[in-house]
Image (cartoon, rainbow, N blue to C red; front, top):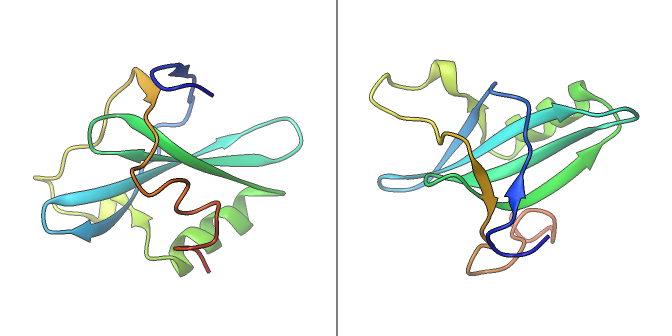
Length: 103
């Protein structure tokens, strides 16, 4: 996918991980035909990475193990990124799919 290219994400069930003061990484889990895809999004709706899992339960377990929580458990002042979502690579590359920040 290219910089600025639109990304179609159906899910709006946000997961969030606080990475720095006033900065969060967001995740949305999309069910697909044979698996699920976890999209990683920054605060301004840019998609910077994704991971595929064979089923939703494994994806959600991996999100929890890596510091993400369902956003409904977060403070009400936090605002989720809104569509349209576009490709916007992370300055450090694919930080989650590379395994660098993913267990």
